[in-house]
Image (tube, rainbow, N blue to C red; front, top):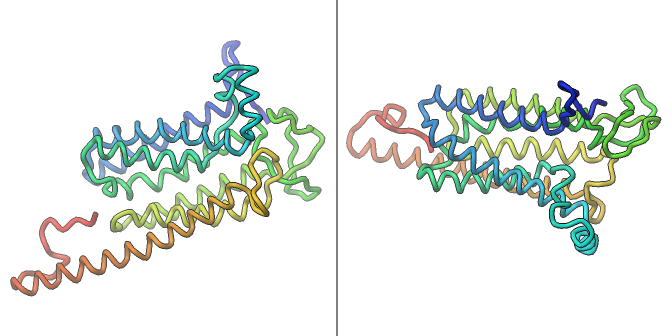
Length: 282
């Protein structure tokens, strides 16, 4: 559509602009939600910085992995230098996995349990992802299969070289819309405080299912195919499995903790579990 924004004679890539806006939106909303819940904003910023850096690295590494074979990568570096691999796009799943690793590192640096920020931060992730997908839409990448239906769209200025005469499914818009719905659901879901990383597990299950299905509509070649599924579909299956197991284990831990608190309260003749002072779910 519009890969670049012309501002005062300077071309600004819409993809980079949307990615920057996405990160700022997620960080801003996370700060607001954390402040309302009495969280420490300084520690949140430490976690966010580590997550952003590792997320960018992770998204770039996965992009290189699904785009180049080892031989092609070596030839590219020999011909154009190491900086040549820094060009190109990013892959969301690499950013998500890298971001989670960075968040855990940031939490260790800030000396705080990361699960305390799960509820306020996780619902902002799909919204940021939706904004990022609009950058893909503007750039004409991550498009869907060719179609003659009313859903089809043409991308006259695609950065991937897609022919302007080809009509494709706008999977970028579909995924952006799905992410907005996931965001709304998680905002409602976290109106009540959730135990541990349950909100994160619910998110990765919701997105994993959505991404697995959307991948069947994708038509771009640079996304990696292993067997009969794309790279993102294999990762989606793994994320769904991890999310389901995480939800089950979190539920069991929550019930066990409630039972222990109830037993302790009964032993000392205290009030019911819900009235125990200082009882904050992890």
